[in-house]
Image (tube, one colour):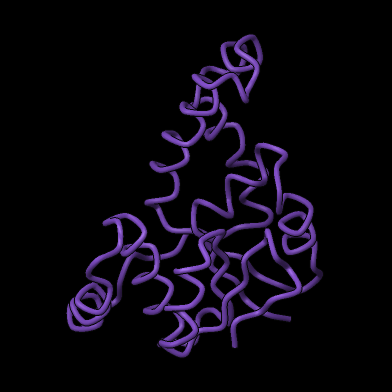
Length: 158
């Protein structure tokens, strides 16, 4: 079974039903597979969930009863612990610098998430990068890391 690295755009689909949520549930439900996220995803998720609350995609009462974004994330860590592993950011300065240089032109946090995925792939810790960003899928593929967009699950970037 494959090992996955989930960026925040994919991870958010587990906490708010939207296009790609069902595919994310399938990925995390695969027997024998392993999924990883970066520590950065914990911070980014707080922002994503806060935006969804402000735009009323998440019910305000549900939001308050769970302690806001941080409460949702913190409570979710129990479910994550069974299905997700937190990854290290980058293992070497050289690979982090190289990956970041290759990703100029991307939003900084997207570039960092992809750099983490490429670093983990280089060290054979993951097989597939999962992101809801087609551009990141394409770049990951060009760098030798298979990628999946949960919004278009039939399309796997080799």
